[in-house]
Image (cartoon, rainbow over all chains, first blue to last red):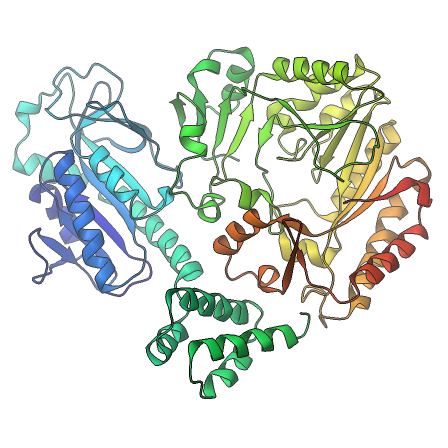
Length: 276
Length: 338
């Protein structure tokens, strides 16, 4: 999967994954171990992390590393799952605007990039919360997911969406397999909207920051040092930004003995360019 | 206008915050301990965040009034700036704020009374007539309907006639000012660049015509107005045909004609020009943020920690521009921004 607008879904349980796998037509990636990972041609990927924040943390890191080897592009990240809530009705969905990890009291604030969603506080707990003391969604993965995702992407590209499965009037004891799947299915339109939004954001990010294609060729041909690689990258970016790609191509057609020689030539030509 | 409102616990129950929050009942309201939790955190992308900025209502601690950077303003006397807000609702590509802050969210410090006290303290310390600039870290007028900046600070300065307030802006939000009696020690300074530069780099900024109209209304109402032709960026592809300084000068000539058709130069408080320049650290951050922006792909040089565009015959061109300007104003009204 080499997609410039990919989105990764992180879910705790296979039951939560099922409607998402169907909706996004995901297929099992057999090469991926030890977590079950599903993917699509459209760049949507899903990992089943297991329960709890440590599991969510580890799975998110795992998927990030797995993709880094595969594509080197940034993806959007979305943790989806069920949660309990003091006030919200069963089946309601909320986009997290604040995630509080009860154990550490650490707070995370996902950037509010998407309008038209109900938002709320999400409290990540280590054992199921049955008393719902605050007006918030109680669940077990969001803080672990978000802490890991922040090591992979910027805050705008990681979001948490929770669907209410239990509240003071509908006990967690009533949750069964089909109920979980129904909860997710009932919010599939909103989840699709979020995924589309994240795809668009990831696309914008990658279009702005992905390394110029020609750089890969140059690197394999001239074996530059780390510093030279950065210099080359910036020079190529400058040629493109200044709409001098033709001139860049002319220069690259010449043969150079070293990265240093090429860098000198690129710099010289930029200085000679109009307006410089 | 905003994607969400973050509210520091400490200011949550203040009258000013409550009145702001009431204006946006449908926005997510998110409590936080300190604004820095959101504003200063790592792993943020200013460019993406600019698509959906939030506002953070907070209390400002520490130094609320600071000495203005050298060459910033018009006065030889003591100059200060204060920022009741961090970040700007506009998105000017040449603006240093993109490189200064990690976040594109707006921080609105609502403890205006503390700013008033800090201004008093600075006045006491200063000999002569100090000038206080607002609009260094934000555009003070752009959010005025929400912040009520003018309704608080203009009366504050009316009680401090020995000091001058300059409100630097690109905004047309002048309603609150027009509702007040003008005071002699408040200057509304409107920034302009030529039409082509505006189209290329000044995103979300009101058009030149609207800004001229707003400034004209203020002038007619009796407010002191000033003109800031900054930043000047010579020899850009923005000015079609590209490299020739005459294109830039022609664009400025047109701008001056449009401005002075509506603004009476005889009562303009001051007029300034200033070249594009930026602290090196901010510039590096912005290049990373906008690697595809032609303005930042141009040849630069660094002098005294400031990045400047490398321009042939820069000082000659600037002088030519000044000559052009002096065809419209008295040179005594003019200063060159350092």
